[in-house]
Length: 347
Ligand code: HEC
Picture 1 (cartoon, rainbow, N blue to C red):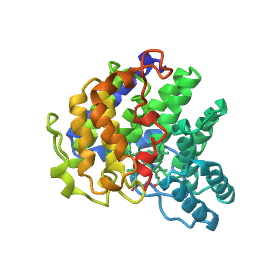
Picture 2 (cartoon, rainbow, N blue to C red; picture 1 turned 135 degrees about the vertical axis):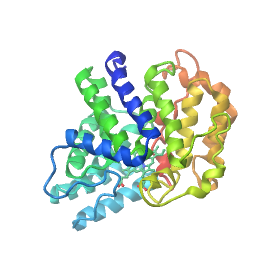
Picture 3 (cartoon, rainbow, N blue to C red; picture 1 turned 135 degrees about the horizontal axis):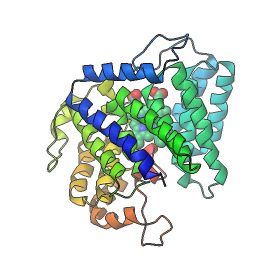
Picture 4 (cartoon, rainbow, N blue to C red; picture 1 turned 120 degrees about the vertical axis):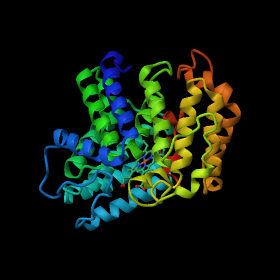
């Protein structure tokens, strides 16, 4: 368990900041983030001048090995080929050894370890040493964001640092993780307002303050993406479908080649958080938003979502039960599922 007293004040601070940001303009948000960047990343490296952390990592001269490993990573990831993870890592680390200054190679090594951790329930036997992936991921994600400050990798780094702090009962490390996670939200709220909820939905009971704040961030994410306040009694996404964009910071609000079912996954995660909090009625409406997304009919996890709509009242106790079943039937929330990454990333 995360030491709640230590971390709740930190997340509160993050939450207040995010609230302020969402009420002000993105231009102001950029200035804040830039200022904080100076405090956190006063390492301006020799390859890149300051860049927007929502920018795609620049196409510097990449080695052939890096390009090949990248293609292999996306092939495995977009096809849900968890069984290929060892081979993907061999390709990526091989490329890293040839060019250790490629931020994308380093970032993808970290992400692949995160994928291994996150979908570990696919394995028949989960070895205790899978925990080592936390440390390895952290090393490479840190390396990546030091080379180029990308907010997606920074958010992953923050989450994993919190996990490591928990594993070791190391409050200082947990605190450090919260700082990094907060920074990633400031850097790119359209993307990282999701991240705390994704991480904490399976860690905390819904009465916990951090859980509540993370759920509120899902509403903020929704509102920031569509650019207006949502009627929370009728959160229908249909009117916003025409606002789709494939460019700029808001591109991550929509489906893309890299995350072909991002929106469906977003609404499944948010619905699960609402159900776990007991609000299955609103959850059913949030889940139903996935049905209006173009591409829903080809989504591999459609039946999981339909089942969640039907079973929403039942799942309140299941999502809150102990994973060992000692307190009644258990069902994992999305982020603890065997398809926690594939839900958005699988074709
Ligand atoms: C709610 C949907 C969602 C979930 C769940 C999700 N992602 Fe993503 N992910 C995205 C979106 C959106 C992007 C941005 C895609 C883009 O830039 O077009 C992204 C980008 C990425 C990238 C791309 C970095 C690059 O090269 O540009 C990686 C790697 C990644 N995610 C890994 C993961 C892993 C590992 C998990 C599971 C722990 C995961 N994602 C879970 C939506 C999701």
